[in-house]
Length: 250
Figure 1 (tube, rainbow, N blue to C red):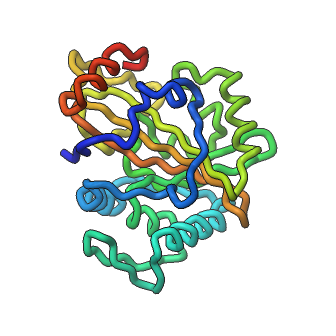
Figure 2: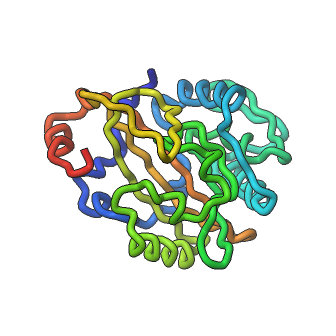
Protein backbone atom coordinates (compact mmCIF):
# COMPACT_ATOMS: atom_id res chain seq x y z
CA UNK A 1 0.00 0.00 0.00
CA UNK A 2 1.11 3.56 -0.68
CA UNK A 3 0.66 6.01 2.18
CA UNK A 4 1.72 9.64 2.58
CA UNK A 5 3.19 10.71 5.91
CA UNK A 6 1.13 13.90 6.16
CA UNK A 7 -1.33 16.15 4.34
CA UNK A 8 -0.42 19.58 2.92
CA UNK A 9 -3.67 20.93 4.41
CA UNK A 10 -6.19 19.65 6.95
CA UNK A 11 -9.47 20.47 5.18
CA UNK A 12 -11.81 19.46 8.01
CA UNK A 13 -10.02 21.93 10.32
CA UNK A 14 -10.03 24.82 7.82
CA UNK A 15 -13.41 26.60 7.56
CA UNK A 16 -12.45 27.91 4.10
CA UNK A 17 -12.22 24.34 2.80
CA UNK A 18 -14.80 22.56 4.94
CA UNK A 19 -17.89 23.75 3.09
CA UNK A 20 -18.97 23.42 -0.53
CA UNK A 21 -17.52 24.43 -2.86
CA UNK A 22 -14.58 25.42 -0.59
CA UNK A 23 -12.61 27.16 -3.33
CA UNK A 24 -9.43 29.22 -2.83
CA UNK A 25 -7.14 31.08 -5.27
CA UNK A 26 -4.28 28.99 -6.64
CA UNK A 27 -0.88 30.58 -6.12
CA UNK A 28 1.23 31.05 -9.25
CA UNK A 29 3.38 28.01 -9.97
CA UNK A 30 1.57 25.80 -7.42
CA UNK A 31 -0.45 23.63 -9.78
CA UNK A 32 1.51 20.37 -9.94
CA UNK A 33 3.08 18.91 -6.81
CA UNK A 34 5.44 16.05 -6.03
CA UNK A 35 5.52 14.43 -2.60
CA UNK A 36 7.34 11.66 -0.77
CA UNK A 37 5.46 8.83 -2.52
CA UNK A 38 6.07 10.11 -6.06
CA UNK A 39 8.04 7.04 -7.16
CA UNK A 40 5.55 4.56 -5.71
CA UNK A 41 2.48 6.33 -7.09
CA UNK A 42 4.10 6.72 -10.52
CA UNK A 43 4.97 3.02 -10.67
CA UNK A 44 1.31 2.23 -9.93
CA UNK A 45 0.16 4.77 -12.50
CA UNK A 46 2.38 3.16 -15.16
CA UNK A 47 0.85 -0.23 -14.35
CA UNK A 48 -2.72 1.08 -14.46
CA UNK A 49 -2.17 2.96 -17.72
CA UNK A 50 -0.85 -0.28 -19.20
CA UNK A 51 -3.47 -2.65 -17.78
CA UNK A 52 -6.66 -0.78 -16.79
CA UNK A 53 -9.33 1.45 -18.37
CA UNK A 54 -8.07 4.75 -16.98
CA UNK A 55 -8.13 6.90 -20.13
CA UNK A 56 -10.88 8.37 -22.29
CA UNK A 57 -11.12 11.29 -24.69
CA UNK A 58 -13.77 12.68 -27.03
CA UNK A 59 -12.78 14.27 -30.38
CA UNK A 60 -13.55 17.81 -29.21
CA UNK A 61 -10.99 17.52 -26.38
CA UNK A 62 -7.95 16.60 -28.46
CA UNK A 63 -6.62 20.15 -28.86
CA UNK A 64 -7.17 20.85 -25.16
CA UNK A 65 -5.32 17.65 -24.27
CA UNK A 66 -2.30 18.77 -26.28
CA UNK A 67 -2.46 22.19 -24.66
CA UNK A 68 -2.51 20.79 -21.12
CA UNK A 69 0.46 18.55 -21.94
CA UNK A 70 2.32 21.58 -23.27
CA UNK A 71 1.52 23.49 -20.08
CA UNK A 72 2.53 20.57 -17.89
CA UNK A 73 5.87 20.12 -19.64
CA UNK A 74 6.59 23.84 -19.24
CA UNK A 75 5.75 23.74 -15.52
CA UNK A 76 7.96 20.69 -15.01
CA UNK A 77 10.85 22.11 -17.05
CA UNK A 78 10.85 19.16 -19.47
CA UNK A 79 11.90 19.46 -23.11
CA UNK A 80 12.73 17.05 -25.89
CA UNK A 81 11.16 13.86 -27.24
CA UNK A 82 12.30 11.82 -24.20
CA UNK A 83 12.28 13.05 -20.60
CA UNK A 84 13.44 11.50 -17.34
CA UNK A 85 11.15 11.58 -14.32
CA UNK A 86 12.52 12.22 -10.81
CA UNK A 87 12.33 8.47 -10.18
CA UNK A 88 14.65 7.81 -13.13
CA UNK A 89 12.00 6.42 -15.50
CA UNK A 90 12.23 7.71 -19.08
CA UNK A 91 8.99 8.76 -20.76
CA UNK A 92 8.58 9.47 -24.47
CA UNK A 93 6.52 12.58 -25.24
CA UNK A 94 3.67 11.36 -27.43
CA UNK A 95 1.67 14.26 -28.82
CA UNK A 96 -0.88 11.83 -30.25
CA UNK A 97 -1.64 10.62 -26.70
CA UNK A 98 -1.09 13.76 -24.61
CA UNK A 99 -3.20 12.84 -21.57
CA UNK A 100 -1.56 9.42 -21.26
CA UNK A 101 1.85 11.08 -21.54
CA UNK A 102 1.07 13.65 -18.85
CA UNK A 103 -0.46 10.93 -16.69
CA UNK A 104 2.91 9.17 -16.71
CA UNK A 105 4.75 12.32 -15.59
CA UNK A 106 2.65 13.70 -12.75
CA UNK A 107 0.90 12.32 -9.67
CA UNK A 108 -2.22 14.27 -10.57
CA UNK A 109 -5.11 12.80 -12.51
CA UNK A 110 -6.15 15.20 -15.27
CA UNK A 111 -9.72 15.84 -16.44
CA UNK A 112 -10.80 18.15 -19.27
CA UNK A 113 -14.13 19.97 -19.02
CA UNK A 114 -15.66 21.94 -21.91
CA UNK A 115 -18.73 24.16 -22.12
CA UNK A 116 -21.49 22.79 -24.36
CA UNK A 117 -23.48 26.01 -24.07
CA UNK A 118 -25.52 24.87 -21.09
CA UNK A 119 -23.11 22.99 -18.82
CA UNK A 120 -19.49 21.97 -18.60
CA UNK A 121 -19.01 18.37 -19.73
CA UNK A 122 -16.23 15.88 -19.08
CA UNK A 123 -14.63 15.38 -22.50
CA UNK A 124 -11.31 13.77 -21.63
CA UNK A 125 -9.39 12.35 -18.69
CA UNK A 126 -6.53 10.26 -17.43
CA UNK A 127 -7.93 8.90 -14.17
CA UNK A 128 -5.73 6.37 -12.40
CA UNK A 129 -6.99 6.97 -8.87
CA UNK A 130 -10.79 7.32 -9.00
CA UNK A 131 -12.46 7.77 -5.61
CA UNK A 132 -15.59 5.62 -6.03
CA UNK A 133 -16.47 6.66 -9.58
CA UNK A 134 -15.85 5.22 -13.02
CA UNK A 135 -14.53 7.20 -15.97
CA UNK A 136 -16.36 5.14 -18.60
CA UNK A 137 -19.67 6.03 -16.93
CA UNK A 138 -18.91 9.76 -16.63
CA UNK A 139 -17.20 10.65 -19.92
CA UNK A 140 -19.33 12.98 -22.05
CA UNK A 141 -21.70 13.81 -19.21
CA UNK A 142 -22.37 17.32 -17.81
CA UNK A 143 -21.41 18.36 -14.29
CA UNK A 144 -24.85 17.96 -12.70
CA UNK A 145 -25.23 14.44 -14.06
CA UNK A 146 -21.69 13.53 -12.99
CA UNK A 147 -22.36 14.69 -9.42
CA UNK A 148 -25.89 13.35 -9.07
CA UNK A 149 -24.86 10.69 -6.52
CA UNK A 150 -22.84 13.18 -4.44
CA UNK A 151 -24.53 14.19 -1.15
CA UNK A 152 -25.11 17.96 -0.80
CA UNK A 153 -24.41 18.64 -4.51
CA UNK A 154 -27.69 20.50 -4.98
CA UNK A 155 -29.00 22.43 -7.98
CA UNK A 156 -27.88 25.61 -6.21
CA UNK A 157 -24.36 24.27 -5.78
CA UNK A 158 -24.39 23.20 -9.43
CA UNK A 159 -25.33 26.72 -10.57
CA UNK A 160 -22.61 28.24 -8.39
CA UNK A 161 -20.04 25.82 -9.80
CA UNK A 162 -21.10 26.67 -13.37
CA UNK A 163 -20.70 30.40 -12.67
CA UNK A 164 -17.31 29.73 -11.13
CA UNK A 165 -16.20 27.73 -14.18
CA UNK A 166 -17.48 30.40 -16.55
CA UNK A 167 -15.60 33.11 -14.66
CA UNK A 168 -12.33 31.18 -14.47
CA UNK A 169 -9.40 33.12 -15.99
CA UNK A 170 -6.16 31.62 -17.36
CA UNK A 171 -4.08 33.86 -15.10
CA UNK A 172 -5.87 32.81 -11.90
CA UNK A 173 -6.49 29.17 -11.08
CA UNK A 174 -8.46 27.83 -8.12
CA UNK A 175 -8.07 24.93 -5.72
CA UNK A 176 -9.95 23.03 -3.04
CA UNK A 177 -9.38 19.93 -0.93
CA UNK A 178 -11.83 17.23 0.05
CA UNK A 179 -11.54 14.19 2.28
CA UNK A 180 -13.20 10.80 2.73
CA UNK A 181 -12.72 7.86 5.09
CA UNK A 182 -12.32 4.41 3.55
CA UNK A 183 -12.20 0.80 4.59
CA UNK A 184 -9.72 0.02 1.80
CA UNK A 185 -6.31 1.46 1.02
CA UNK A 186 -6.57 0.94 -2.75
CA UNK A 187 -5.76 4.08 -4.72
CA UNK A 188 -7.49 2.71 -7.82
CA UNK A 189 -11.02 2.53 -6.44
CA UNK A 190 -13.61 2.70 -9.25
CA UNK A 191 -17.31 2.21 -8.51
CA UNK A 192 -20.43 2.54 -10.65
CA UNK A 193 -23.11 5.05 -9.62
CA UNK A 194 -25.71 2.53 -8.50
CA UNK A 195 -23.31 0.18 -6.78
CA UNK A 196 -23.54 0.48 -2.99
CA UNK A 197 -20.48 1.54 -1.08
CA UNK A 198 -18.96 -1.66 0.33
CA UNK A 199 -20.00 -2.10 3.96
CA UNK A 200 -17.24 -1.64 6.49
CA UNK A 201 -17.39 -1.72 10.26
CA UNK A 202 -14.11 0.18 10.31
CA UNK A 203 -12.72 2.84 8.01
CA UNK A 204 -9.12 3.18 9.11
CA UNK A 205 -7.90 5.10 6.06
CA UNK A 206 -8.18 8.75 5.06
CA UNK A 207 -8.26 9.72 1.41
CA UNK A 208 -7.91 13.41 0.51
CA UNK A 209 -7.77 15.12 -2.86
CA UNK A 210 -6.13 18.42 -3.71
CA UNK A 211 -8.20 19.54 -6.69
CA UNK A 212 -7.14 22.40 -8.98
CA UNK A 213 -9.08 24.23 -11.68
CA UNK A 214 -7.21 25.97 -14.51
CA UNK A 215 -8.49 27.68 -17.65
CA UNK A 216 -6.42 26.86 -20.74
CA UNK A 217 -5.68 30.12 -22.59
CA UNK A 218 -5.90 28.78 -26.17
CA UNK A 219 -8.71 26.24 -26.24
CA UNK A 220 -10.52 27.80 -23.24
CA UNK A 221 -11.18 24.35 -21.79
CA UNK A 222 -11.05 23.89 -18.01
CA UNK A 223 -8.53 21.48 -16.53
CA UNK A 224 -9.54 19.74 -13.31
CA UNK A 225 -6.54 18.05 -11.70
CA UNK A 226 -6.61 15.71 -8.70
CA UNK A 227 -3.63 14.96 -6.45
CA UNK A 228 -4.58 12.04 -4.21
CA UNK A 229 -3.30 11.58 -0.67
CA UNK A 230 -3.82 8.39 1.31
CA UNK A 231 -3.04 8.08 5.02
CA UNK A 232 -3.74 5.82 7.93
CA UNK A 233 -6.03 7.73 10.26
CA UNK A 234 -3.91 6.45 13.13
CA UNK A 235 -0.97 8.43 11.71
CA UNK A 236 -2.75 11.78 12.06
CA UNK A 237 -1.78 13.89 15.03
CA UNK A 238 -4.12 13.80 18.02
CA UNK A 239 -5.89 17.10 17.29
CA UNK A 240 -6.47 16.32 13.60
CA UNK A 241 -7.71 12.82 14.41
CA UNK A 242 -10.12 14.08 17.07
CA UNK A 243 -11.47 16.76 14.74
CA UNK A 244 -11.93 14.21 11.97
CA UNK A 245 -14.07 11.98 14.16
CA UNK A 246 -16.26 15.00 14.97
CA UNK A 247 -16.60 16.00 11.33
CA UNK A 248 -19.92 15.61 9.58
CA UNK A 249 -18.15 14.04 6.59
CA UNK A 250 -16.70 11.17 8.61
